[in-house]
Amino acid sequence: ASENPEKMLGETALSRLEATGRVLLESQSLRVHGTQNLVQALSTLLQTSDNRKGLLIDWLVELEPEIVSTSASAQLDLLFSRGEFMCRPFLLTLLAHHASWATLHHCTKRLLDPAVVSKNDPSAVLDFLIALTCNPKLLQGREKCTPRHGAIEDILGLPLSQLLCIADYIVEEAVQLSDVKVAVDKMNLRLSLLAPHADQETLSALVKHLSENAGKPTGKQSEMCRQLLVQLYLRVPSIITQLSESELTKYLSNSPISVMGSSVLDSMSHTLLTALTATPPSKDWQKRAGDLELATRKMAATHPLLVLRQLTMLSAALRGRVHLEFPVFRSRNHLSLFTQVLGLLELLKPHLFRAEYSTALHGTFDTYFALFKNHGQMKDMGTLLNRFVSLLKAYIGYNAEEALRYLQTQAPAISELQSQNHSLGSVCIMMSGVRGGGEVLVSVPTPADTFPLHWDSILMGLKGPDVLASLHELDKVSSGRPALLAPAVSDLCELVLSPSSSVRGLAHGLLVRHLRHAPHCALSLLPAYLSCLNCGQYEVVSSALAKLPEVVVCSQEVALSLLETVFCLGLTQNMDTVPCITRSLALLNLQTGC
Image (cartoon, rainbow, N blue to C red):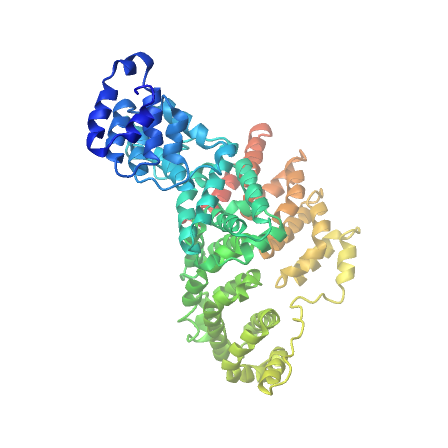
């Protein structure tokens, strides 16, 4: 009977079970043939027996202090196979805290095999992996006071194939949960196994793996893959560079990111916007505000959905200013702030007009209407009013019903402003169409940046002998309308290599103006900038280094390699690159409040 302990223990009455088990544990056969058969029997019985588990667990722990050893397959099935076993949490705790590192490594390797992912209970596997990262034995002999900015240590050190298995387990666990909100919250907790340690290559493979699964025919698994992509984006926003435009629209743009969890960019966007809206009466504020605006515009252009999470705060920050007399309003930098905020709103189109942001958006529009009501007659307000009207037309074009419903509440203010500025005429026509119960008229927004009559001659001049005069003219006409620079970018990229310092300086200045207006174009302009740095001509390199801080901020995706290139220039060409590198790092540190 001792040769078949499973049958012996299974057929023994509960009242005699303890005595029978003690006989097996003390038998001579156990000493001669080893504990494998008995351990396997106990592991199998624990998956089926209900009223005798206490004794079976005690015997298993007595025989196998590490829980997984002599009969690994049966023991791993007990611990991780699909099914509800009440003894599992206790056994998993013993495994995580009593097993040797070799045993834990063996278990991890077996669990993160793609062939067994569908057979295991995802919650049990993920709980075990998280327990490993919090094992008290890891703290023995270590510094308790970790550095504030210290890097998070990769405790598990898993290769890519095993990280993809963890992603599959996370998705599978979410699929088993009926409540989507609970599933998303659970995903967010599990991301600590993926996000903090992945490099760009790993992130790229992970995003590709999830996007392929999310693109499969409609089902709960594809939906959970999409949700995991969104959660991963909130934790590691840089994955946005791994997605195509269609994938961004499909997986991120239609997700309610405004109400999801927390993001690492929340503190950065809040820091930038809070600093930008402070408007202290200091002499150097205009320069500092320009730096803050550049960093904020870059963030808004790259991660509009994450910046929109701060729209309510931004709307509140604009209040309490427009009641001031206009000279005071302008001298205290409030007019500059309203211009900068409107520029941010333009960058956030069309996501800005989605229904979940309507309350904060309407509050922001209310403040602008109050501004134009109090100071709309001032000459300095003309350009700002025209840009605001273009934004309203874009809103009507995106969601006519909701936009016109809101504009009805501002009908008296619009009528009053129309008598002072005819640019509001088309908005009034649309509103009258709704008022009369007729068809809603939605016109194409008029371009705020119409080209001057001599525009063609300016562009031709950039290729001719009188380049400097054309650059001065382009600088003049684009001073308040930087969008005009887009058609001239290719010519300006060639002129940054000109032997003339005046031409180079103007070309670099115009390109930086273009980058400030459209930060998303930075990577397309980077080859021209790198050609300046690598040309070997001292004057050309110096002109490029003068614009390094702005280029680094707008090209943050490759900022590290760009700064390394500049540092190497200082070593190999005997150039003083320290000031421009220091200034670049200072601008980057603005985002974290340093």
